[in-house]
Image (cartoon, rainbow, N blue to C red; front, side):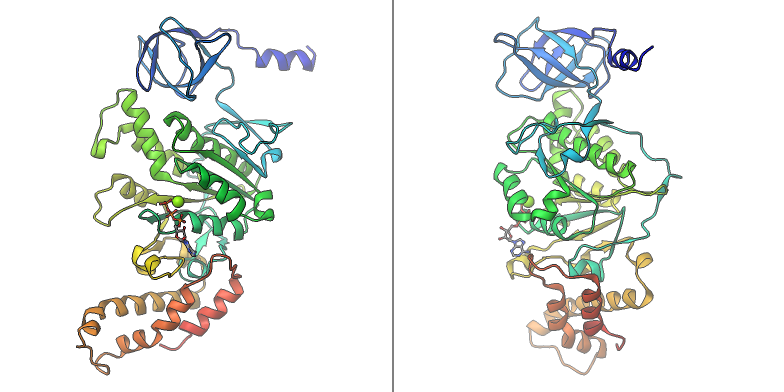
Length: 437
Ligand SMILES: Nc1ncnc2c1ncn2[C@@H]1O[C@H](COP(=O)(O)OP(=O)(O)OP(=O)(O)O)[C@@H](O)[C@H]1O
Ligand SMILES: [Mg+2]
């Protein structure tokens, strides 16, 4: 058989997988088929000549399938035909997507024509087995002093940026995207405001960063199924590059909005609400997303940095709690710092990088520990100092911490337009926290 025919036969789907709409609810459409797996894309016939609405299968049982629309503004009707789209479990990938802004289905949002020649990559590739995984061995240089100096990250690490609204999560993500040494950067903006997409792409990144990046955006006004799909589209693109041995930086803003989109889908599909109405699909999906990132023994890594909205430390936000336990580190941003104009507003004492000590030498690890200790002694003595009861000379460690405080804060503060190379960060850290105690 000629190559041409075998390719065509492979692409041919012999079963016409269709069904009919039984019921239309506010956020889901119920149909009697097609009998296809979760996540399959379908077209639902809509009013208007030849028009069809894209939807995703979000629940299946013996009698029915539930579909969540991926498009707005189209109206379907009872009896309309539902047709499963072939190959919807694969995405278009390839170098032509670099420098582009796309939606959750890979359609251009940057006003340029659809990217030409592409390869297909599975939307959900199998999880790498534990034996295929490698722990981060290489430092992931962000160009941000506070991170590279004290909370060193490794290639393949999965880190969260936790903060309340408006404290600088997106700005820090943009700075890292611009400065970090990754072969490819995939940015997923999920459930954020529309103007933020343009602001991040054009103002947050520079020409060089855009050239190695693909931005996938699904804004807050888009249907939940499309917002959730954006995360998996981005992850699949990252996976495509990692499979080719590249070091990929995956930035997801925000994991909380992704969880909210999944909750919306779960509730619409009839899943039972649990804590804060989050449905079981949320707690099943978020770990899968995190687990698919990381470094592989065969080379290639996905370093993931995701933002998480967290209003308090009280541990009453199930998404923040879950993300903290899934990730290998968290950078906590503090409103108090951002209000003082201290950026990046990273609260060093409450942040952890679980890989830091294995990646840096004893000398830097010691300096980082000293710096954290000084900050916490400074904090612990605050009440005494503010009430005028602090008497220098009683505790040498606290005296030293207070004496070094201005220099420490100066080290941690950095303009977002300033890229600091690792050697310079080490030099400054030496000067601030040197060998002496
Ligand atoms: N590095 C920085 N230098 C100076 N100002 C900053 C910096 N980072 C953030 N800001 C200020 O804080 C504001 C909010 O920042 P940003 O949008 O990054 O926060 P966010 O946590 O992503 O907010 P949201 O929760 O609304 O998404 C910015 O408009 C800017 O004024
Ligand atoms: Mg933001």
